[in-house]
Length: 471
Image (tube, rainbow, N blue to C red; front, side):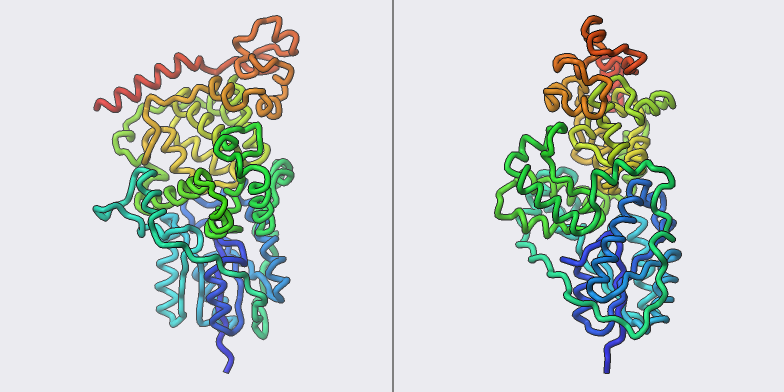
């Protein structure tokens, strides 16, 4: 007698290789129904932003083609997830649902409800760990409490048992006698109406094949010099794997095993920071909305719409900050060193609430990830785990001169300054009039005057942070 069908619910695991839920369904026997359900209302305030939706559309298109090569179909649906799964089970006779876990607070609650409801209806439900090296909640300190500092957390992770080898992709997916009707991908309306995404499209190739290609490029061209190159926004010194990891087009286990023999402890630590971010989100689910450190709830954040727009548009008058914000708008990504500088400028030079910056990144980053985004912004603001000390205020000029010494990054994204010599490219407001004139730059016309004076803004921020620490 043929085994009843199984549903594999794809989420942020848009790959065939090293996909435990898919492997378990195939191993069970019987038809396998791959399903993706678009239900943004079930993710609270954290439905994918515009850039993430663009990526999701193309990643689903790639996954659909890969599944079709296995003589199967990706069933695309939208609406309430539980209702869609129940309907698909009735239509196909499926009596099992498999998925890989996610750890965002609202999604965890939703998944627990779905699991209990389906099991109550007599449907077997199994979920698997696939997006992290270690399940959140399994790495605790000697007191049985969650770590709040990265170094001991990562040391504990490295001391755990060896990780399993990644799973091979299936060679074929058995089909049901008849398929439930899928929606066309365009019915999800994930793509922006305007041509805003052209730059993103030129910069990225979503999908499992794109993830593997990016990993190969990184190994071939950047891994050997990663310790220094990772800080240079003017060079291709990073892996650029973050959106592929977020959407599960490649697993951290695949990355880890590929690089395990190449002795790149620095890059492995970057994988560790991703683990740490999810560890914190799991144990402190309030942190996307509230600071981890309670005293920061009374920090005197300010808001100025004009300054916020200047920051968003890359018109602050500080070239490294502006280059990063323009790169973000054009490509859906920003180099991590520049992310820290741009974030520091918003929260410490402009004294804007870190949650405003996190919201902008959430909408514009193709790698927008709730755990990473929360950790990064709280780290810069000084209100999170392992946070930067309050007196650390990134100097946008000094950071530019150190990490973009020839000005190539600024010249690419702030072309109106391209003719300035290296010694003035990061500080056009200090350049002699003759130098500006020769470069064809009139401050206030071609490029803005600084919206604040960094040295003064730094002192104001330090006073506010110091007052808070003394309360």
